[in-house]
Length: 327
Ligand SMILES: C[S@@+](CC[C@H](N)C(=O)[O-])C[C@H]1O[C@@H](n2cnc3c(N)ncnc32)[C@H](O)[C@@H]1O
Image (cartoon, rainbow, N blue to C red; front, top):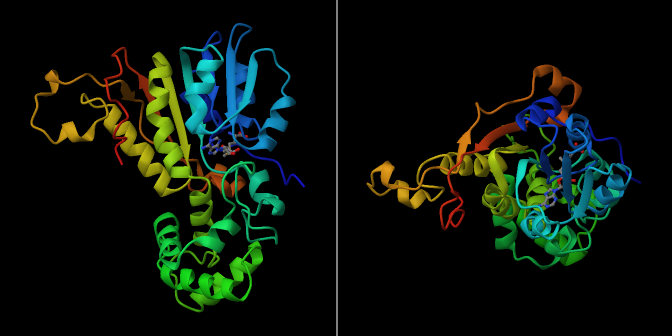
């Protein structure tokens, strides 16, 4: 079952952020179900090109339906993207879009295990052909590791109690279903006041496991510095994030890459004259963009979205750029 449609978030704003030129070459690194990709293709002329990527095999299936000679799709993770683009013979692009997180069909399909709203196997892998499922992580991680994952990636106050409850539950039976995990978390958290907007008690734990299983933050920290050298002068980078952990990485990276020390925050702490430092490879474009109240009302998934935009300057990318991605 493929779940419902995906309504792209900040669609017009993200496409405007890329400042699409009809004859330009663009990268959509998070094809999903192709909402943004189709809007980019609509703005391209016959000489324009769009290279799209995603690690989800269902995104690959959806990409086959595009059937446009200006469009190429490859399955890959962010961490493989620079090599994939190189293998396609592309050396400069005019814009890169990253629309992070999950698509609605991924969330809505119980067989993928991302949501506790319906029962399904606890998989949670965007690419089910690689890595450990959430159930495998729950079976092998120590209570301490589980506490760290749930605390750091879910920003969950009751991480230790939840981790303890998971370890107790798995000594009775393996924790392998979404509703089973949701029940374990609900029992661990009990009637404790949460102080947030009455989310389901399992929301933060599910977010944490999903981020961990898919190495989402590490993948993001890797791709950001790697796309900068691909961008032609005045080429745009547009990133839509969906939670504060992602947005912090994007914000810090862009802030650091748009200063004369070329993305190495260690240099900023030294008292070196800025004109003696390599000029910045990126310039920020405007402030962060949030969805309108109307968009959030129509599409609750847009609620926590933030779009950040930067433009490539004419300056070379400094040696060692991206070695310390500003975390
Ligand atoms: C929010 S959806 C993109 C939706 C898309 N813009 C659309 O309009 O249909 C995010 C997509 O990025 C993919 N993705 C997330 N992290 C990834 C990574 N590290 N490597 C490759 N794909 C990733 C997910 O599989 C998902 O399909």
